[in-house]
Image 1 (tube, rainbow, N blue to C red):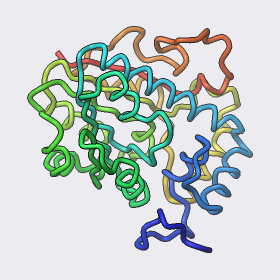
Image 2 (image 1 turned 90 degrees about the vertical axis):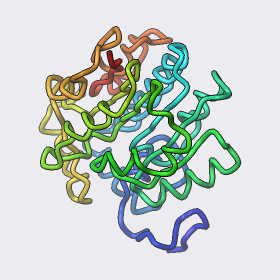
Image 3 (image 1 turned 180 degrees about the horizontal axis):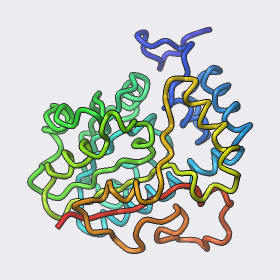
Length: 270
């Protein structure tokens, strides 16, 4: 298998990557056949997976525009993945040229490609770190350079928490990040769930098993369990809802049924 120039020498391109699978679902080009094969296996059980990911991204863009409208000009995107068209810095900086964005990911491909995409953009940074180690994120040079934790920050946890197992205490990690942020900060979150998927749960489990097979378990939490991540935040209307229902710009009834899978929400600290 030929290694493209954008793939760091340190990564094993024969092993599927969650970030590259996500990139494939979104129509990106930074993925390998091993990633596409895993994605196609998951889609045999849940053919609407690309629609679910696209709905997540559309919500993220609406939430970023909402944050800018609320006067927030700092964004910390943890579990950011591989940049694709319309990502956080493009949306935020098109609305406020002074907005600052730090992308955080532990996938070497995501980090390397983000650095290439963001070269020359002084208002953005990339940090190689893991959500499960919040203090490493907060103390990183990239965050210290661009993010003033004494002012409100929009913390984005988009399609990342369902890859953190309960044994790694994702609730504590989210709480640590929350406690480091100034009052008026936002939490922008999306999470997978069996709720809303237009399939019997036992069939959707087939897609979940594919992620388990590539050693990236997909944790499908209930709405109540997802709501727990917002402890310490006041929910922004309309609350914790399916992606197309969060401040839609188009009629939700026109959306693909798969777009209603899982939950999204925005909270604000007091």
